[in-house]
Image (cartoon, rainbow, N blue to C red; front, side, top):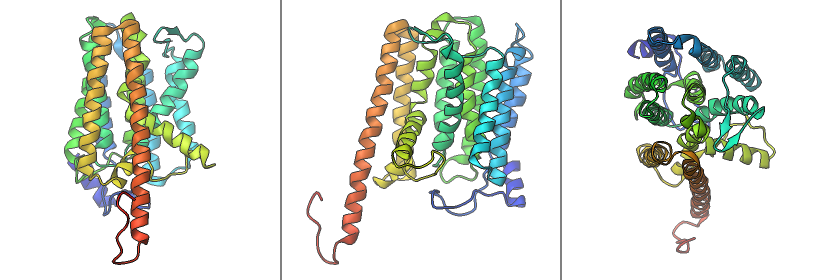
Length: 343
């Protein structure tokens, strides 16, 4: 990571400051070059030494992730049009599907022919969800690390030998992110950029597609959805907000979760603490649902957790709106005149 920081400073590869950004100053933005390349090298080395030819099984996912990373990296450097990025994400999402990797069920529901379609949308959605949540120092990295560690624990403690081998790969990627977070914690010395956030979203969505455990397959999709519910619900809210206002989904704004929490008075460290606390609860709920309850009871537990996150986002939305109205009213009040209490 120090080498990447030095290279970015030498070449002037800094994150662009605009109306959507919450940072100031010149910060290198290619942190993904370090942790993605290290992960891919470690993954190839690890999978090449595992029994059962696991490397061949994982190549479609690693290949798709690498394509997402390259396109994101090009966007970091040259600002690609949104349609090109979406097209690239679509091609990357097709690679696992062509190789037969897709979701087969949603809890008690057998997906059948809907499985590949849902998986295609899921991988694109996850790539963009983690990209959109990457707006504050360490936020995307912390969320990704917690998801990967929890998935690794679920796979390792499941009792299936192949699932345990798969769980180790989650830990490897988590370790790479941990190394990045040392330099990304507030105040950040480097950002991961679109290449990193889109890569993490794709890999978190794609890695669990490979499991031989029928017990895990039952709640696989709900499990990852709950663990990723903060970026997912934030993205769903953005789609609804921009559709309602007649704007393109690719039109950026400053109304994501972290922006709303800042509007409510949270500092960067304060909102990170709040989100990390909520994410820790989600990880605990997920472990209980999959490893203890299991089956249909676990599915209901996970569905309730995802619903609770939707309620949380609604509360934050209306609270931030009220904070904005109070701030606007206060700024318009004549000097020396007090605003009504509770206005």
